[in-house]
Structure formats: structure tokens, C-alpha cells
Image (cartoon, rainbow, N blue to C red; front, side, top):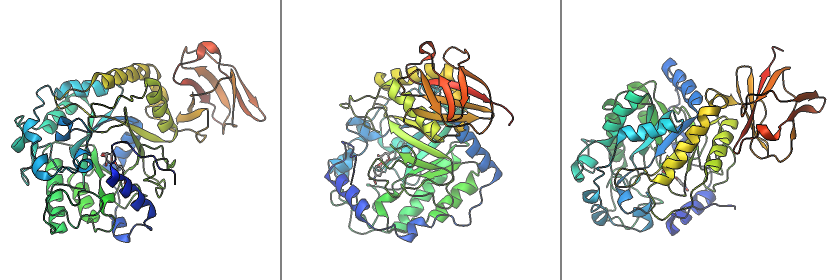
Length: 449
Ligand code: JFZ
């Protein structure tokens, strides 16, 4: 079994991976979803918007950032709740500047932000009335960063999505426990899971009523209890009723359930199954999104210096687009509220590059040809964009196009490129001077037939 295990996964994480790989098909309860679901007009419009948007900023931010060892630190290091509760008093992000975060996302060419409202540690990074395990009640900061961010997003024209962890290592009623949050937290060995789900629905209601119109909810964590009845139908209807335009997606690494509006792939291009925890994940018919980190960490990790290059990230964006998927690229802000310079530099470089090549991304869908070893294609109307990511020669043979070709030009310099409609396919010349360091894009205009 080929398993890629991220470094911050502890032994428990490895056990989790093995267990999920060995377990039979998931029990039907988890698959229930909202069976009678018919998306509204607003929802369908949002899906189109989402697919056009192509590029978003993922933000993992919570009290774990104080320790700088990622968002799984509580479980990885088996920190009991009494100890973990000492983190919020140390969390005072006075340098958090929502205008700067949103401006950075925009400068990167991103159209939306997805931020953790509550991660697996159960800590609400927003004003919650249903539990005092939240940023206003427990930290010296005493402000609601989500409110500040939501206001700023509206001002700057960026959509805001909320990540919400269904898994909870802090709530006593998250019981029975299964893979994680087991044995060390100090919670009683009893609890009422339905009460926990009531609490979750109450927090979701808060998120859906106090922050204006949102882009959607990004669920994560139901993989922790495959056997449980998550009452998805109820939760999903609550969301769809309260905000019909909001899109629901869930990181359960399976085919989408009824009531979901988009499908996500974690650290994986759609259908590639490279991570070891998604070997059962099939591509459904919904809009797609793939998420990735800049170094190896979601939440702030002070020691992780393995930054991907701007080239890697741009090529990943292109591959996602060529696979008909959005790219949600993550940053884990520091406990000060700032985003570290290595992330900022890369995001700005991507944005600068995209400001020249955006036509080949925004508003496109996966192109006429499935991804190839040399690159991918995207398409918008009668234009096909050929993204050549890795090809050493000055000519390349593409499969035959479904329609006649009117023009072909390199987006690098805007000049026509030579092509020949050959009986084996389309022969394209890619002259040296038209090359781009990251992605050489040839725009092909198709004729009417
Ligand atoms: C999940 C989170 O655990 C992680 O912290 C981060 O938020 C990411 C975006 O989503 O990642 C997972 C979820 C499940 C497994 C592995 C990683 N799993 O089942 O092995």
C-alpha cells in the first residue's frame, strides 16, 4: 500500500490511516446525506461562480498556532484538555490585520477565502453563545476575527467560506470516540452524541446568521467516526434553508453525499489517490476543489522550512484547472496574526504571474484533452488554452481537436505560433522566445465547426 504520511501525523495518525485503509466499505449511515436534495437556483449560480473563481486562500488559524507545531499538536502530543486550555490565555494576535489578509489574497489572484472557524481542538475562533470555549471568552484578544474578516471580505469583494470540524477533541459529548481524541483528553467515558450534534448545528446557525452572506461551509472530520449517524440530512438542510446560495463540501474522502454542492480532494489532484487516505474517493459530478499546503503544514509550523517553489505552486494551479478543479492554497498564520514572509512572497509572485495569464484560468473549465505528462488544457468558449508545463522540445503533438483551428498564439508574447493540423493530431511549435519559466500557454481559437 503506497501511503504518503505527513510528518506531523503521530503514531495515532498512522494507526488511523491503516485502520481506514483496512476497513470495509463505509457503513451506510455516513452516506445518508440529504437524499431528496434539489439545489436552488441561487445554489446552482454559486456553483458556476465557484468554478469560474478557480483559486482560493485556505487559512488554518487557531490557538494551536501559539505552539507552532501544527493544528494536530493536541492529539499528536497527547495534551490533556486542562493543559491545552492554557493556550488561549497566551493567544493575543494584536497584529491581525484583516484588510491586509484580504488584500494579500487578492494580490495572489484569489477569489475566495476559506478559514477555520473551529478545528479538531473544538476551539471557536468566533463569538459563540453555545460554548465559552471560544476566542472572546478565553483569550486576552477578546475580538471576533471572523467578523472582522467577513466585513473586510465584503468590502474588498472576496467570498468567505467557513471550514468547520465535525470532529471535536474538547466537547464532552463527542462520544463514543473512535480514531482520535481518545484516552488522553480527560473527558468522561460517556456522552450523548446527539447533544454534540445539536451543539454543532447551533454553532453553524451562528456562523450562518452573524456574518452576512457566506460562500459556503467546508466540513472536515466525519472520517473520525465512520460508524456514526452524523445526521447529515438535518445539518445540510439547515444550511441550505438558512443560506440557499451557500455551498456545502465535506472532506470525507468519499464520493459526495446528497446535499453537498462541491467535492474536495486533499493534497491530491482529482482521482489520483496519492495520499493513502483517499483510496475510495471517486470523482462525482459536482464542482471540484483540491487543497494543498505551501510547506508541509496546515496550521502554523515554525520549523517546517520545506517551502514549495512559486513554480511548483503555479504548476499545481494549472494542473488543478486542467483537471477541472479549483485550487485552495493554504497559509497557517502566526500567533501574532501575521502571515509569515515565505508565504507572502510566494502568494505575491503567483499573483503577479496570474495578472498576465489569468485568461487561461478564470472562467475556464477542464479542456478537451485529459491531463498529459507534458501538461494540461483548459477551455472557455471557443478558446482552448494549452498549458505546457514540462516539455523539452520545440514542437509538441496534441491529439486532434474537435473543431477546426482559427488562430494559435503564445500568451507569453502575444505572437502567433506556427501550427499544422496533421493527420496524427495538431503539431504546435513552441519557440524558445515564447517560453515561460512556469507554464507556457498557447491560446488556440477554434472555428465554428
Ligand atoms: C484534515 C485535517 O485533519 C487537517 O488538519 C487539515 O485541516 C486538512 C485540510 O484536513 O486532514 C486529514 C483528514 C483525514 C485524514 C488525513 C488528513 N485521514 O483520514 O487520514
